[in-house]
Length: 175
Image (cartoon, rainbow, N blue to C red):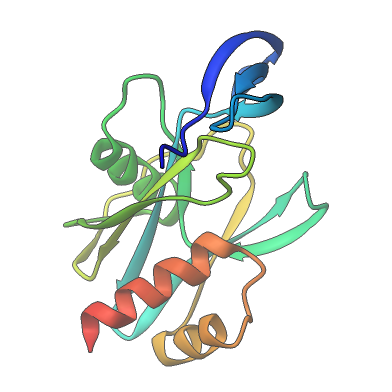
């Protein structure tokens, strides 16, 4: 059975600097029609950075949920930007370190309403080589023992899904 949906027409409801919201009319596999609202996003990267036995994390206020989150370094892709180049830049901007990055995989985090893909990387070879933060970015660098990070990820101790997933992906590589 073909489960795909065919776009019949649509409209852009909103276009901002980071995302676009579209409403499409689609034909379902059974021939019926329905409406899909989709948030279009250029994609992002997330980096699990280990400095010895410590995981580097950033704490920042996230406006959408209205709270501070403790997260792995991450950032949005610029138009046409290679995910590895973005990960290298974001790691330096957010932690002050650069490292040899290894790809972990790419994942849709919330495919029910957005096409955003997050490309995951990790590194254990860190050298201090900072870049300036983005002008609208305010964060604090923190580190926690790797063993604590793994336990927190496995027990739902991070409110940020990409952080938990990145840690668990790396833990599997380290076994």
